[in-house]
Image (cartoon, rainbow, N blue to C red):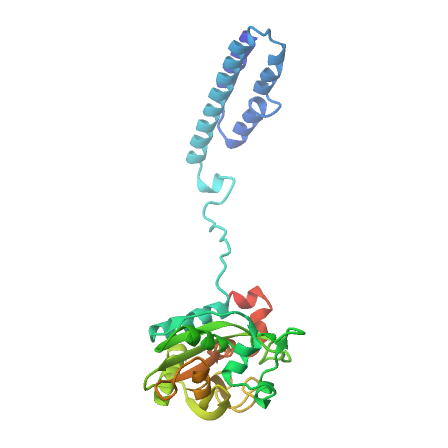
Length: 337
């Protein structure tokens, strides 16, 4: 067995000196180092060696395999280094295959932008529950039971309870004020749910960013300055905007802010309902009844509140004409962001 090992060793090193190409080197590997090669045959024959000889023969076989493999790798490296690029089995001039890299969803990106702008204006960020009680979602916000104002929002009720899927993130304002004395200055981003027909403008699930500022001497002009500052930072300083009187049970007076429709340039389209304007925020001064609910004295403090939908400003900013595109998970659409 010892002589056979030496014979294979001499034969291998004699053969490897004749190798000039990668094809010849591969044939050498198959002949000696492959699973059915000469070295493997020697290991297979080890079982027939006397027990007292096996340690010595096994060491010789391991040394043979190690030295043969090392010499094979050395020669392969030399041959590949010496070959011109066009002679290699692959084209090293080709660009690498890029690995696909995911990005944040456009709604998440927009939410992050909202937070960045409002935090820069001194607002903190607070979150609240998506499954909410009737008290926080309606009653504490000055929606009396059976009041017609409740019909403004088509609500998902949990059967047999006074629990709802929140229709806005405004309930978080109540939760903050219950725990904190003025001044209060915060935004509340999150998902909201309304039982609405799916259309290019609406879904049953969307996102809102509500905000509130309560302190001594807060005025409506500060409200206007805050939402206009946001709009200019989000859309650009050249936007056209307007304020309209409106109604919300939890603010008085109330107003909505519109901006000129980006998609049609004010000419009218299905997204702006052919008005040329799109409402981006509802706002107003916090109603005295709401302040009393949380233990604030409306004679001592005042405040303003606002609520942005996230999807609609996003659609305006990027000329998206159908809100459903944001949730169809079409990679061709999402990768643009």
